Length: 467
Image (cartoon, rainbow, N blue to C red; front, side):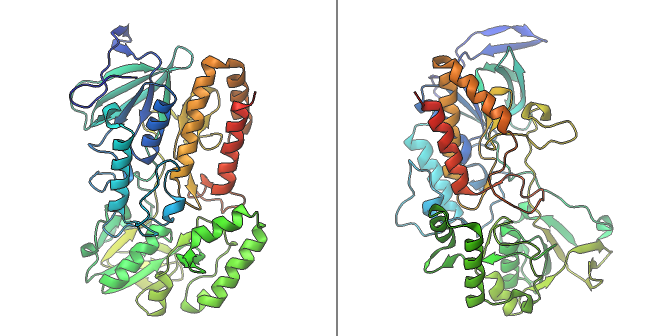
């Protein structure tokens, strides 16, 4: 394990290797590098250490929590953010959330959860805070040169050589900004949801929210409560699930059906039946009819959207066609005059420090080609944690992803034959989906069904541990 300095950072003890390409390289031996100290990075750090590895974790911000730390510049969290998956299906399997917490905890509770997790497993002394990763380059077979510097570009760069790298830099920080004709000439205020922090930004204004993901629906509800007028623009119809059904959080109901292996068509029928018995046909409110079946898009859990549409506080409108100086033209030809347009159009996964070809993509197509959304073909000492969008909580998935990676790294020295067999499995299965049939959009390419995905991880772990 790495020792720590008085400042709580890992100390690089190994003498620098001879300069390569003009750079002095500090050889970290068998130490593993983890990039990011959010939920996935903390789980990776903890699980790698439990398997006996020395770990250096680099975090560009000054604290743990990643996207859930509202103090961070890149955090998408706003004042009213809560979990959309329920507590039991979100918590790490070896670190439960308090029993007296609500079904859907507030973001401040999530941050305290990660801080307690880091303290409980003594992780902070292995994290380099305020340090961003500039480059990650493969060298000497399966080793990696990781170049870092102080966040913001201050001070010199430093390169260290690692036995393996686990990427956990998150995928909810780089805004996906759409392009529209005339947007540059629009005189109103325009913002991405990543810049939204509290309801004062909406109060008293005529607001157009673009996007029907969970964030878009949440912001439309906040605008319904605070704005003078709210329009909600969507490209297609969606299925809006209440947060509770049959007296339980909706994801727990779905989880029970999945674990009982209820067929998809039966689950879809039950979902439709529940909607008909509660809110009925949503097209009567002006919401477009979905062009896909339930469970073919990422689930939208919102109990208030239909309420405010039914009370006239949210006006559903179709997709935006173009912008004018003081108006927005919709796909059906109507014009509206919002003062503020909020693009809740999601985020793009980005790995700025990696050549896209390293993750199996191409120069033109930066989408990684991975097995189990984590393992890189031909790169047994490189993995990505947390690049999943699930129908339930993500933290249990990242926990088992990182356990699998840690056990794979141990096998490379203890049973190289089995590690090579695993590498062949990764090569053959890269790009495999774990979400059944989903709408083919950029939002859904890393969608997974959590029960199917956990079963796939479990099979992989059993294969690694087989006698």
